[in-house]
Image 1: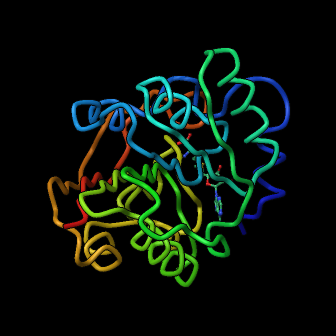
Image 2 (image 1 turned 90 degrees about the vertical axis):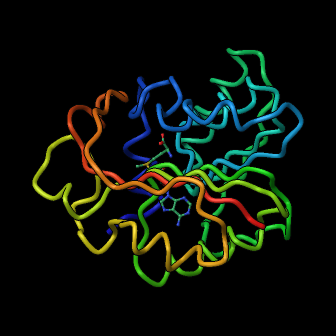
Length: 201
Ligand SMILES: C[S@@+](CC[C@H](N)C(=O)[O-])C[C@H]1O[C@@H](n2cnc3c(N)ncnc32)[C@H](O)[C@@H]1O
C-alpha cells in the first residue's frame, strides 16, 4: 500500500527519484502557460515540476503528503532561485481552494479508487474558469514493464477514467499510448501512459 511514510523512505537520501528536470509532457505544454498564473503541482514529490512552473514565472505550489520530498523541493527551489510554496497534505483530505488555480499539474499520481474520486473532485473545484488540468499517468498496459509505475493495477489510470473523473472539462488533448521515459532512476524506458490537457469552461 502506498503511504506517506513509504514515500518519505523513498525520498530519504541523496538523488532525485524522478530527476530534477521537469516531466517532458509538462514541458511540452509550456506554450499554454503565462507568468502570473497560479499553478498547483499535486503529488509533486521532490518538486521537479513545481520548481519548473515557478521558473516559468507562475505562482507555484507543490503539494505532497511526503514532508521529506517537499523538503527537497524547497531546497531545489532555493538552488534555482525561485519561490515555491509547499503544502504537506494528503490530497484526499486537503481543503482544495475553490477556483484557486489556473493550472493543475497531475503527473504520475496514482491513487486508490475512492481516494482518486475524492482528489479529482477537489481538483475540479480548485480549477478556475479557463484553468488547465495537465495529467500524465500510467495505464494498465504498463503492467509487466519495468519503466516505473505502481505494482497495484487498481491505481492505474486510463483515458476512460480521465473522462469519468474530469467530466465537464473541455478536452484539448487526450491520448493513450507508448512514450519513452527518462526521468531519474525510477522512470526509465518505454512506458504506457495516458496524457491529458483539459480546460475548465
Ligand atoms: C510517482 S510519484 C510522482 C512525483 C512527482 N509528481 C513527479 O512526477 O516527480 C507520486 C507522488 O504522489 C504522492 N502521493 C501519493 N498519494 C498521495 C496523497 N494521497 N496525497 C498527497 N500526495 C500523494 C507521493 O508522495 C509521491 O510523491
